[in-house]
Amino acid sequence: MKVAVLDFGKTNSKLFVFGQDGRIIDERRTQPKWVRQGVFSVLDEAALHHWALSAVADAVDGHGVEGVMVSGHGCTFALVDEVALTHPILD
Image (tube, rainbow, N blue to C red; front, side):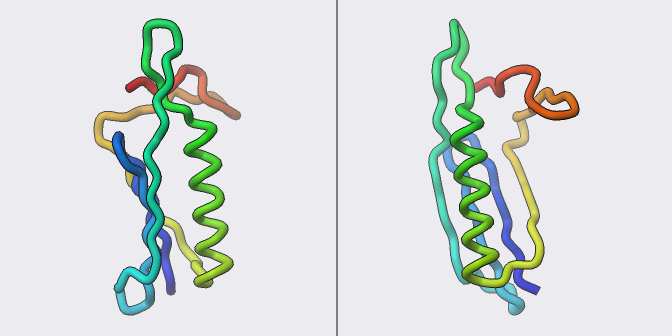
């Protein structure tokens, strides 16, 4: 099975596609955008979400990916309700 791995980091976010033999067969990278919201620096989560959806869709279409794994920066958290963020993701 081919697997896509999303790694959401503070300075870089990546998508790796692993083949059945465990080798990386594709990768994409982006730098998350941080914007000022009042006195806070917050993640432009809409831009990162769009990048992630596009990257995963391309991996499925281009490589037949059947599974997705996700990892994130250890100091990050997101407060959510049933449908959306309830607070911006802080820098």
